[in-house]
Length: 65
Image 1 (cartoon, rainbow, N blue to C red):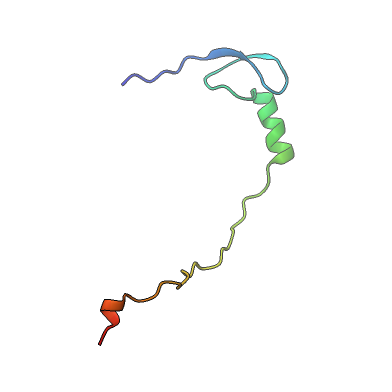
Image 2 (image 1 turned 180 degrees about the vertical axis):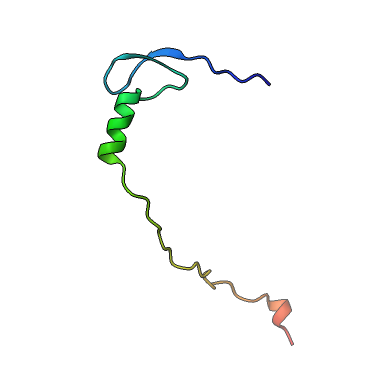
């Protein structure tokens, strides 16, 4: 398998400048601006423990005495 590392020219979707990059997306300047304005510190999210809902009735044959 060959790894492609060639840069492709395209228009930046934010600032409409012509840029050459490996992947399509914002240019380096726009990416830095987005990280500075929208980026935040990573935080740990604590989720409640999952408890399955018990709404299934036992099998009539299995519970027959």
